[in-house]
Image (cartoon, rainbow, N blue to C red; front, side, top):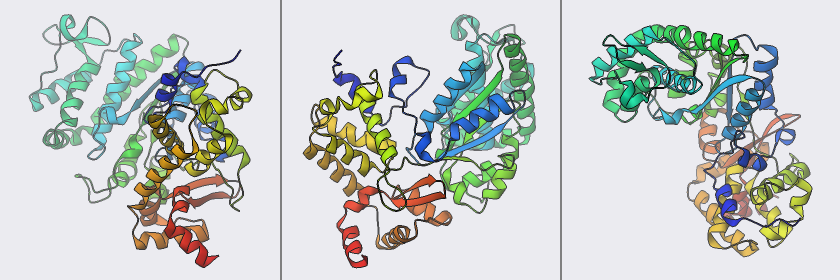
Length: 462
């Protein structure tokens, strides 16, 4: 049977802001497993620790990677796989509750309590969070934010409830949500709330553990489920600047200084953490305080070339599949290659897109999305070249002479060292990291190979 390209669906699937959710049947055909070429089976390792090695214990694992390399997609895949094995998994993006430019430990704990209790409410898990209820009531009074809600109006008669002193039904997630929403939207409220909550951090942890996590885990196991897993995504977006609570940079303060408390939740937890910590002097402290002695699992780029500069055939093959799967998600991998000319004017045009992306998933999709905004498939080479020039010139504007010297050194050594080089080169996506059997190595974003500045340096240096 000949398949026809659904242009509207293809366009939506190429949106770089869309994350593949393996829990959605319509997304499953888009997923390509890059584990064999990334040099790291990060998701398999996270899953194995939870489901096979320590299914009945509490675990705390860390996950990081470069901006746009596909972390959220992989974590949603982990969620789907753990759910298939009988775990109740709460996945959420921290940006739903937090301002990542200004965040503290208690903000993260309340966000977790909010999202977990909301998920449990939907699953009809019955909690009696009397201590948490009293805590929220006092917090609401402190902020002059009433949080007692009637079942008839805001609760619609469902969920986790307890009786308030006035006999009105109370929803834990709605109560926490009112507090976190007010704090997220007002810097003044955040500051005021933190001063009030900080001395109560131990009490907050106790309420979460005893009144939410412990009770939920017991009920879930009575239902035949294996336990509770919480995946906190987007914490890697926390900005690398000094916070209001410490003279240290915010990632170091939260994940190192306060890391021990983040690791004290009585369930399986996976946190995304900023990649900057991997290049920081605090890396070892991070391992010991939050990672239980283990380094964060890193998701590198998909290689389009090897260390010696030769093409990585397997990486290129998988990137071709990723692009074509967005157009023909229901086709088998072998079939998709037969539809190349439905999407691109030639296989060479598709390969050009894959190579210049450097294996950066979001960049590849972004350029493909830009092409589709200009013309219907098959995408011509000339339209792709315009998209490449646009991305190249945008990247070039940010690079000064000192940064060029750092970039040329990376070309020579294939190394990035320390926090300063991380902030300058990796966070800006000037340089990509890859992983092979020898370890990690670094290469320029291929868009920079397109610049006259690089070509001139290359000619002078052989």
